[in-house]
Length: 300
Image (cartoon, rainbow, N blue to C red; front, top):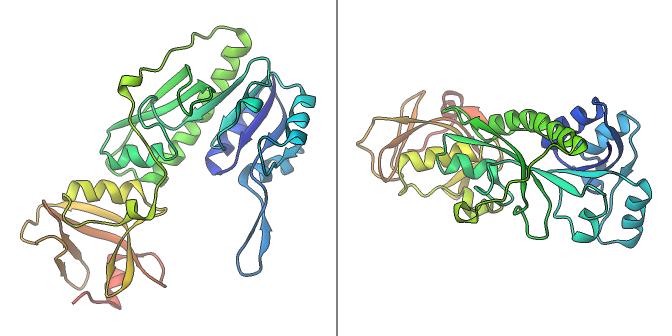
């Protein structure tokens, strides 16, 4: 199969690498434009562009997906299929170009957790299981018919970072299997059950702010779902304190937001229960274990 691959972040790289090392041909990649970062304003490439440059794969970086020159370039490549993993929302003018259409890898068992942040919301909602889905692109986001799904257990110690990495590897295999099925015309598309839909909207700052009146379990899952990025936080003495890791404990005698600390341990009361804080970061400082953090800081 002659493939154009579309993606941007680290999550996309295992899928691209798996396809590149398969019998199929990656004729080009499409990724986000270069950005200036840091104090020196150095130009940085997306992880997908870095992989493409190392492997001599042509790169397209449109500012606008409806740009006529970009669409013309896509048509000239004459790809059999477009494979999309963590990229922007494609307009019909783009995703209908190939003879086999376009499909996307989504980080949930659709129709659950449709939206921009399915991995984070699955953890924050306390799910014990999630998965990946490949589906045919349609005009309405995340609603297309399903090619393949694979379930993934969410371990108690999983956070966004660990689950993200597991899903990117498992997703890569599902992407390759989907391309093989389409090439062999052995697939059976499954309609999504819209009655089972749940949203996974983009993570905003208010999503990450901790309300200590919520239950300890709720906040613990919130911390897991947003660690290591963008990370949950609360404000203490007008300074942001980020929490990366916590533990549910039986200590019950703390009221919501009440803090108890020893030389090495930190507990914060919640609306129901209590959390032991294991890793955190003060504004302007680095991420630390609680023991290291408390060597130079007191909440009292």
